[in-house]
Amino acid sequence: MSFSGTYTALITPFRDGAVDAPAFKALIERQIAGGVDGIVPVGTTGESPTLDSEEHIEVIRLAIEFAAGRCEVVAGTGANATAEAIELTEAAEKLGATGTLQVCPYYNKPSQEGIYQHFKAIAESTNLPIMLYSVPGRSVIEISPETTARLAADFPNIVAIKEAGGSVDRVNQLVQAVPENFGILCGDDPLTLPFISCGACGLVSVASNLIPDVIARLVRACLNGSFDEALVIQKQYYPLMRGLMSLDVNPVPIKTAVALQGHCSSEFRLPLVEMSVDHTAKLRALLESYNLLP
Image 1 (cartoon, one colour):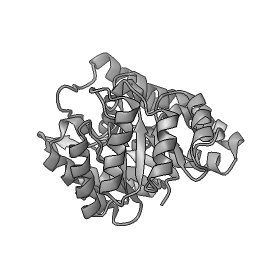
Image 2 (spheres, helix red, strand yellow; image 1 turned 30 degrees about the vertical axis):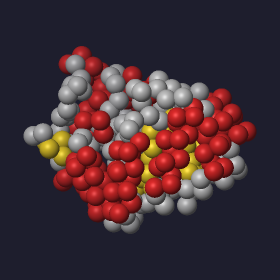
Image 3 (cartoon, rainbow, N blue to C red; image 1 turned 60 degrees about the vertical axis):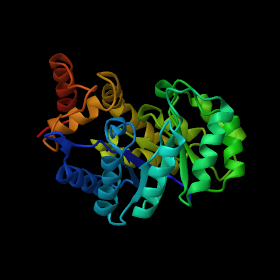
Image 4 (cartoon, rainbow, N blue to C red; image 1 turned 90 degrees about the horizontal axis):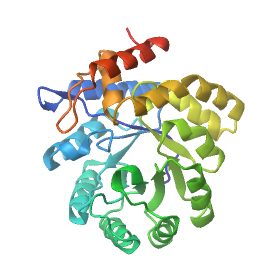
């Protein structure tokens, strides 16, 4: 299996301290109706660090149940402890996930050899296709192109990388290093068009929680080579994409935006907190400028 197209990095709705399953189901229904190719539960946007293992696995189970085979479910099962990542990945495989997203180990700052050994152990523990996730803004270190190429060559179930380092040139470096059938997915909504023009094959999107139809249309246009059409969409929606990532730390703006639409509460778990009054007002004005509020 390979990964290609639009994948939504799902928010995790909470209500009264617990996962809000009805709101989560409705969110997934909107993603499918909007034409995304897959959903990614319990990644960064899904507030995975604040979920315990039981909740983490339950959110994956709910995502698989609610998707009901209508789109791919790429479960976020990465961790900075290899044994924990393996445990979560094995649980996701048993539940029926179609793939797994594996973040670069954060905080403990392993060497590139440590990164290789971490993903090697995970790959050997599962038959699921694996999407690596390089996000140096959060993990401090990156998965180098050389390490990515080594993993791709050694483990047939490591099939893609979500590249969220904010550099289009990383796509050029990866394209030179990895096998032709290895997938490179953009991890930053505003960089979708340049990433795909340089050889990426899709997007793991935050904004598609809010506008799945628009993001799916943007990615399809890029993949079809219709870059004039894609540029029109990119220019129109860039201010929204940018605002969702700059008014506060992700996932605070995107969950707040979905809450302002009335689809979930704006409840977070510490250490994340609700947006300030001033920033919420700016977000509301931004959403109103796109006619996205009821």
